[in-house]
Image (cartoon, rainbow, N blue to C red; front, side, top):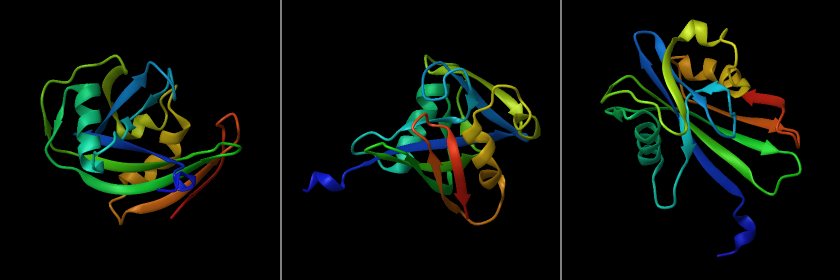
Length: 157
């Protein structure tokens, strides 16, 4: 295999919804350390996307997802970087288990409306979440970042 074509990392994010609230995590480590966002992380070798999403949710919250809905995909391009990140977004409203924080960060429920006004929210959450919460078709997009990983442009359709 020609490794010149291997330049993507894959991450998954899951919006867990209950009674018009979204489960947020205040991350302890990069990326987005000390920011609020949704549960997620890197897909591991050999995992399919749904398995990666379920694993990340369980590891970070103790919850077991019963259903998952694909919402969209976004390509993150960092200026000057040798790799890109492809993020897949999911939503779940059916889960079981006891909610618990992890070494990744503290988790808690927040009303969806308040999540857009909450201090310390990740800019990625603020820019992408409206597309996740729409009950329309899945979305595709790209986010361009400068070398300091500051968002320069967002194109989602």
